[in-house]
Image (cartoon, rainbow, N blue to C red; front, side, top):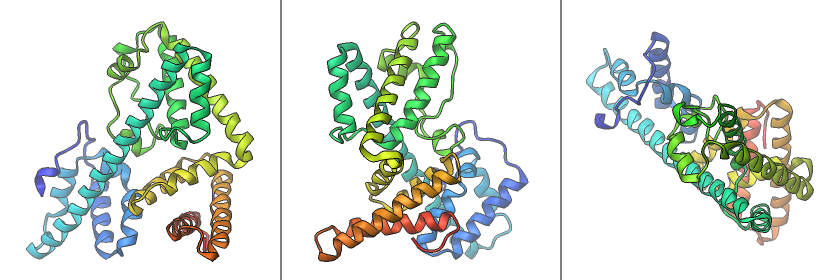
Length: 302
């Protein structure tokens, strides 16, 4: 329905190129197979999240027949449902990261033993709040707290608009970003505490990275990311998470490294599961991620 298509706050003005891109997206969605829809929408996240959706919709139906408008209405409902699903998933991940960050700071205040115990739980897989995305989130928090300390603890009067769950330019970072001041109050990090907190988090990141590398070797980050992707039950969200992760990897080598881990994991698990002692769903998800990664990199097969 049109009531759900209200413009997002601070949506950028529409340019003719935006309208053209949105019309092209709707046309592609209309001709796409169901499994192709998430990828098409993911490729236009920046447009969908930064522009006035209501305005784009109004322009898209200009000059269309009643029959075409009905078809477009169905496509638009799919777009809105996709964005709502994405926003909810992103919000949940943000809340999870915030909860773990507060637990780390509280453990650090309690003493080295408490922090060590929490770190062992995280790296050992005993704390479900710890995911590969947490390291990116940690990077953003360290940068923010360091900047806050450099400004003399005046962060409450300025907004960093920092990323929470993705890189600075990622469209995912624009969804439901919590308010800095409220968040700092919840975590108890203000003013003079910022430098101490940033140093604590930097130490935590170094330790997490060292523990991961000791356990998994140089492919640790890729194995951790693959494990996280396998936990995503909905296929559409799994595609979004994978394509976002691939875009945010620093270079082609990192993407190739992840593909190698995905392929190897699929081959090993598939072989081990030949006797029926491994969940077929796990094998299917590994195959899906391997093939999707290869396709995204312009390669054939998983």
